[in-house]
Length: 109
Image (tube, rainbow, N blue to C red; front, side, top):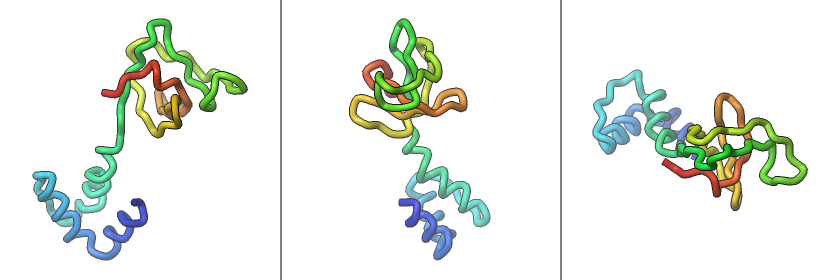
């Protein structure tokens, strides 16, 4: 997908950005294509979630309860950005930190 985006930006960015802007009901002016095009493509991919564990949820340096370090305990209600998932685990960004937490104790928004 990133290669496709780079091709769009280098080959015919204005035309493609205008087309995408129309699809998304946005007005487009030349010179804004790079930032708007990237946002239109990648913003929908960002998934947010909220911690649902009443006693907090441990953010770990790997997708396991064994052999990993606890980076922090996230309190109930804390919002996290889901980067990826691996089975029962989610890779998340929170407060400038990246780590893993159990998917069982977060709810996607």
